[in-house]
Figure (cartoon, rainbow, N blue to C red):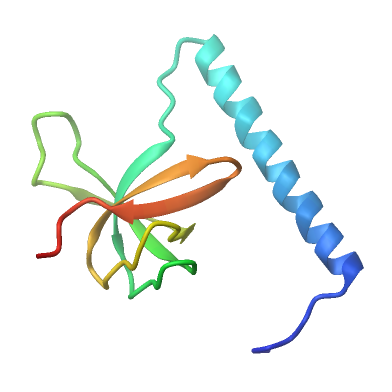
Amino acid sequence: MKGAKLGPEALRQLDDLVREQAVRLRNQILTQLASGQTVQTRWIGQAAADISKGNVGTINLYSGKGQYDKGAEVSLERSLECYARMGDIGNGDWVFVEWIDGGWEVYQAECNE
């Protein structure tokens, strides 16, 4: 429902859920680091639609398969909902997605001239 407002209890439950997910991710990363595994908290992606600065949108994730395969990115068939803090993102733009302070943020990876 557009324009619907959440009550204090719903907001508290949402806040608890976000905190639980952040703690779970942090613990997963610490476990991976302790076992010597590589941890990736930054991804390349492509915007599924326009995202205005200050809003959340869907980013489809990609992988380059290795440092020498750039330009041959392959879809991971996974997407994330990300916050556009630093500017507008255009539909189809290549972006970086990064876990920052408990949430996924997106920013431009290419210049739009």
